[in-house]
Length: 184
Image (tube, rainbow, N blue to C red):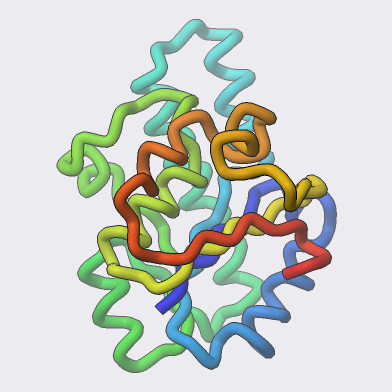
């Protein structure tokens, strides 16, 4: 099984549909879980936090809702891919469907004691999910060019992946690929 995190910025770059088609045509031969980034919905959360001075915990939960909105958008584009809110539901869906879209359940994440801050974005949540599902591969698809000479720590320091991603993959058994949308 593989987990593919699609950066929310792919929608803003108008390349989301191309990536979804690639999954449909190329990647769905293996059981696949799509993790949506929050995209412009998460950008609105950042703006609301600045305007209203809400705490990181509230903003984190709102950003999870942004991921849920992107999951609905992806499902709207690929209606044959079901949405799953929990890891148990993903496992069930993958028995009969090659692709499942993750719409993260806030309560499941809270029960796992995942810190609620902007240091943890859909990148880290995709790594958490890949660990929970015992995935073989985690691919992060980005709209920004990726310097293949940089390691994960350097990609984190450069802001390509989130600050806590490396913490979530330290003892992981799955392969990790951070790639630009054109190389996906």
